[in-house]
Image (cartoon, rainbow, N blue to C red):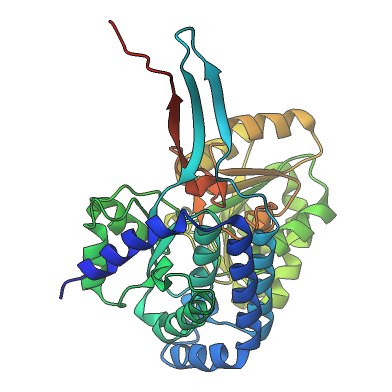
Length: 416
């Protein structure tokens, strides 16, 4: 099957996008947000078809699941995007040369943005909103697990675009088969950049096989270090929130590092997790403390496989360290460079941690659950980039732009 028509239509739509005003873009996004809420029952009915095909114990189930509350949250994020200043047409550099040339560096859309994602139907709305606001065309390749949901959502978007006489190919949903993924990864000259969102396996596959430039949005193997001076009440609240707010997301806590001097507080810090049936994989010192102080059926000895694991479930590894150097070494070995946190009342420890940890987001005395475009005040997000080229951390409007140089003269020629 040929997918060229999808990409050709996307390229043609990209040229038309340049003619849309920011007011028109915002009006359409507002219309999409309103339509999402108005069509909540339709969306939930289609989403249920996908949920009925998935095991409820699958870690992806929660990511796939939509609720009326989540749809309202998605709509709110789209409205938040409309209120943000457009990143297009910004003068990033401006200079007059001695030869009379006037040179400007101006922000422009990336062009055609391809996104490969799994059982996350909210991504369909989020990616469209961010791409549309930034003058980009979105080519979406969702997973088969969310196919009913994605088709429903794209149909809602298309109806709003049609109502406003805008090319529906501004938002293109590819078929949910592997052949479409292969075509997208090879759409050189038609797709400008590719962004994978999903498991580490998906990300690795896209990175290793794409001929189109890739921006990685990595898996989240997240640590929180409880330092000697940590406030126990803060630690308990932060750990509970980071682990249980929503276990299936990439900013959820996976490994708790605790200084040996704080072991006597460990039971109090993690006790609230028992109410959520969180399974603890504890190293020997932590296990000795928790044995008899945490539900026996939820406590297991840690093995090497539990460190460096992204659980996406009600599971948490605990590692005891003797100093901040050991904590930093553990994070350096196992981190996916997504989000890392320290709980401390010591400014020296906090400063050392923030300087030494190599991650997109580094926290002091706060939950890693905040690594999110909306929470950072960026509106929605297209993903959390864990790489260092072009974008890092929550990718929102500015990260979906490139730039071009505008050179104005009056007959100048170069003589050397």
